[in-house]
Amino acid sequence: QSVLTQPPSGSGTPGQRVTISCSGSSSNIGTNNLNWYQQLPGTAPKLLLYNNNQRPSGVPDRFSGSKSGTSASLAISGLQSEDEADYYCAAWDDSLNGPVFGGGTKLTVL
Amino acid sequence: EVQLVESGGGLVQPGGSLRLSCAASAFTFSLHSMNWVRQAPGKGLEWVAYISTSSNTIYYADSVKGRFTISRDNAKNSLYLQMNSLRADDTAVYYCARGPLSTVFYYYYMDVWGKGTTVTVSS
Image (tube, rainbow over all chains, first blue to last red; front, side):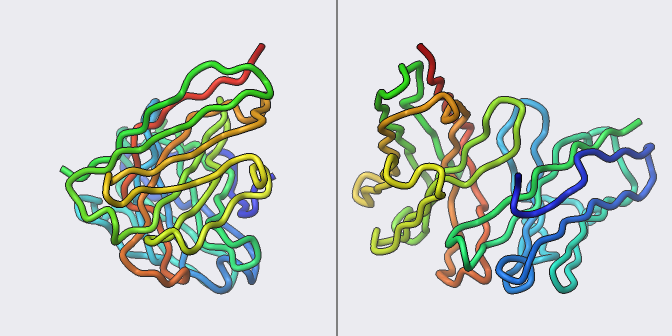
């Protein structure tokens, strides 16, 4: 049982806009910034978005994030086949004294 | 190129011990907090342990507290995870991951990850 809650799966067709939700509590998302990680099949996780909506160098602007209260979402516009991956949200948890992750959302590009 | 390379994984019997290492390169290791994160087969990511830049602050997930010890050697640009009393549910790929330059947890994220090392606990 993950501390943050994400839908286990999602899908979209090429060019479509998809969103992935993430919900938590006052000790994590409600207090601290939210980050998103992308894990392509068979590879290590990669930081996708940090501090709610900031993109590291090299991440396309098709990826965007938002946060409100104890929930957040990742949006991917202009979906591409290479976006097929597992996506994890994460935030520092002040009660647990460590980062907590969502269970991950497996995104399929149809 | 900024890089983290884990090593030390392998097959170990339940109750056994293993020491993982993570070698950092191409950045000032001593300025960044570090973490171990694991992923069991077919499962999601689970944070394991955190260590601050000077090793003054250390946190563990409840699932490993009392069994695992995180440490670092800034002179050797290396991070370690000593794992004792291993159990079958410790079987996972273990990643080391770099924290940001900021020491404020409000802004915490892990921006560089190694490729991982596999730990299998089985008799």
